[in-house]
Length: 225
Image (cartoon, rainbow, N blue to C red; front, side):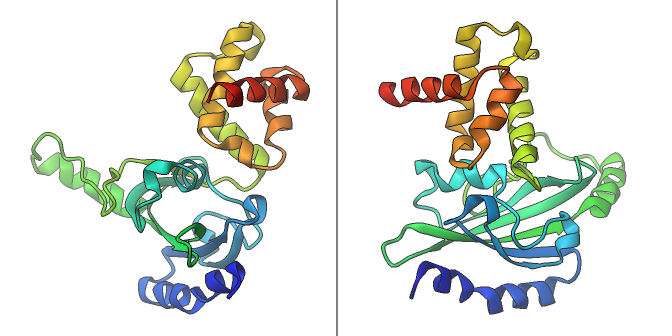
């Protein structure tokens, strides 16, 4: 079987999950051979507003290409956000592998728990909980891990860019020093953003530097690894 055939063999199972869980559960399949158009099957796309032909998420970029996750079968029950944070999702990802054990696709579910979270807030006000309520998913990843559902490469770059600005404290690219811009590109590289076609140009525009400069920074990074 080809990689695509292996991934497509999960379509009946994905439909099965969607039927069981109902319209509040988005179920989809990603083919990782084309990150910009990885979604090949989707049920209940209204949950995130995505469609077949859409691309990979920031969370998937961080996990699929990280050695930390290569021995895991799935990551379950982490937090996702849709529609600019107005909807809260309980998300899970199952890694689809080929015969060699390489991750070639993803089976993902995103359950809209926005209304449930409102009820939880009410109950939290009535019931005292012990400190350290944070729970872990089946794969050892805390449920507060965040995933953002972008519709375009530009959206994905925006989300990752803003996260990195928050992490580094570099707010205005116009005032950033050369070394700070290099560090910023390194942070984006570590998040695997440059695996996305077109990301270099998008990052260059936001950092107010040329694409060749971004490529030079990336070469310097690769030489130090």
